[in-house]
Length: 188
Image 1 (tube, one colour):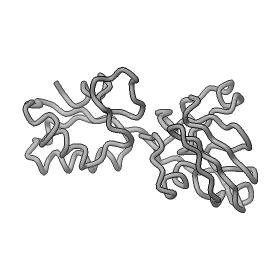
Image 2: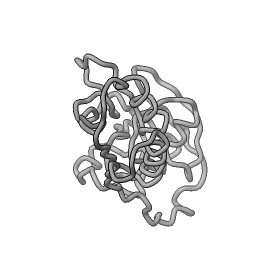
Image 3: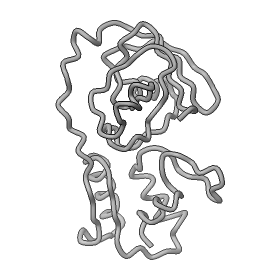
Image 4: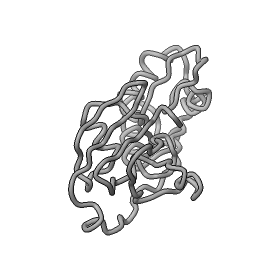
């Protein structure tokens, strides 16, 4: 089995399965996650091939880490998410500050953020652990429901127009456009 098969079975990923027998690992797969898979959690398994899918920086870091563990380059396969998107001009639209309220894992937190910053980045800077993966507007792991206020997305390759109109937003791509913004991760 490959780590990709383990991810598809729900052992790793951005959203937990409520009846999962094992606790999933959240967020972007980092180099230390590769160490954990190879040296601890699945040390008894001999992986023949490695399949990676994600943004360039993640693929590069994981490939380097796998090679440092003695994995041959030929055994590492990957598919890149295209995340280097030309950003829209945000100078005039995204000036000022927004008071943001975040509902995550049944808890509510409020803080002020700069509108030039993306919502996901601001939330993580506050020490919260929101779900995310690609950070390129492709995977929908960081999706949340806007309950108050508005935001614009730099890139969106997954949400349909009706979903956006209903208030769904990819927080990794969202810049607030109103004085207040309330996003709820728990309601998606």
